[in-house]
Length: 112
Length: 213
Image (cartoon, rainbow over all chains, first blue to last red; front, side):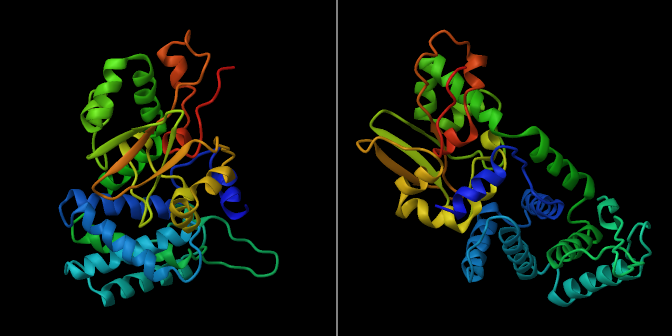
């Protein structure tokens, strides 16, 4: 008993499809890419399964850590498909970070 | 996408942050992916927002409940459902992503079915929506095959020891929906009333339908 039961109680009765906006965001981006035939869904499923195995240093709770594996799986797949490269991803992430740190609060955060 | 959520007030009694709240690392990575794909025109934000809306608001376990209730009242439909689930579910217009290659497994007094995806989280979206967090947890994925009876007990499901438990491991090629047993004493209920007794967990096999009130 324990972990599983806690999880069931936490998120079964007032069921929400996604717990956080970034979960739904990465989900929708991935579905959209597969519909645009950038990859087959089965290809992504396999990448996700592999990534979950790699990340399995601690028990996955099926929430943040599950979707973090999802992000990494998608990043690797779009790098493999030559759509983006790692340095581009890093640079863009840094731009967002800088934008959040320099935009006064109350203003929309944007990057160029 | 809306940036509103990212610029919420961040007044802290001990520190004054004059900048916007810095999102956590994964969120920044999602933003980076999204920005690059949008710039390249590989995705567009309307489609992405529409997908989110669909899976947040339009598709969910109520679809599966309609399938189950119909199978309870219509023996011919049930036959078709067990024979070719994908096509029978299509009759109710529940089609689309992750709805291909559906298999419906029927609970009986002898056999109780439960569905898992040990590798990732394959799940029949058109009839059940997005899987709950526990379905994606390592705990559920790894233990259900090993000790299904114990896992079901943790869901509050005590099955008769004579009932055999069958575990179905989903893949991206094969997705399962459990057809639970119709609760006793529901002979006089309409299809709509029956539908409201069907729970999401009863269609995964980690629960039973509700009893009529």
